Image (cartoon, rainbow, N blue to C red; front, side):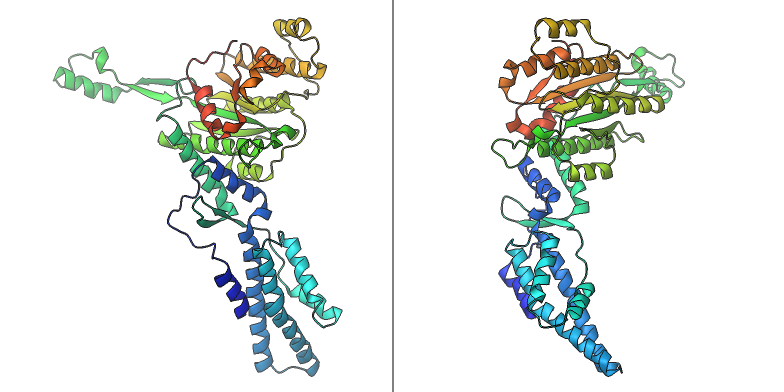
Length: 465
């Protein structure tokens, strides 16, 4: 490739592929948010654009080399030879002028997308003398720019690292899962979700009785000799995340939004529970985690591939159809209940009220909740009132299901001043007997995952107001 291109890359700009001392580039929640932002917005990941231009330059150099060799060793007609020489001139112009200038613009941050790079090259060709046919031929011969496939991140010490997009999921998930593990006790998940059940382990009981009675076979088996083989009951967890328009709000003191904080929390819990399941060393997955976005599109995100696409494409927009999303999780859980022996835990994270009803849903209203809205909250918006009644009916129905353990946890993003608002009182009253809402300060989104784990899974949490 032309020396000029090499000079721009190696001397004027440092090589982002250089891996420095420490491979751990995520030290806290803010670092993880920076990685997620660059992954979701390719305009912030410069390294991919640089790689695209260098890739085009490499292919251009190969084309120049092939044409020169063909002109030297291949007999051809004069017209064909003239066309080939003309094409060679165009490609050399690209390699010596257009592509180095495009690389410089990319490194300066002036070209942000692949469309801008293509447009810049096309404008550059206008300065080259030639017919429209030659320019069209050149455009067709150039490699079509691919989607941006990696991002460049910088740690707090200025060290750079390039991560491919397909590696971001495991990279961030493992970092956040380990980070969450360090925040929590050795065994934070208790008997609320994982209930020990089992039967007598006959072989170990027999061996223990031999040791205590000092005879073979043992003369008797005492109660202390009995060894119980415990088996954890598996849990299906649905993390229901609000992605309405209000989640666009930027977290105070940071550069990431509530949505990005909620997405990172989902990823951290997903991988944390995955690690918990592996640590039990059983053939069964003790925890299965699904993310349910509160949006018009009913989705149950249960696999790593689906979670990756959700993290990449989720946008904070629209209203808050909370009841419909929770109902989708409940329907999914009931199917799992018929096929798998699992307890169900629904975790709801939101920053506002539900404001959309389920079409055609037959509500079974709570008498006390209806009296509350009629006597104490007459001025509430009728849609919001009906949404609360619908939410109460939906969740009250499942928590009363004795065929399986159903647990509900509810988290509200807001400051402590939220406790003095009608939003808090209405939500708390609608969830009476189901769950007690927990307030998460938006400035502490970094501990949201820890709070969800500790608050929603601790033993004996009160569900009454």
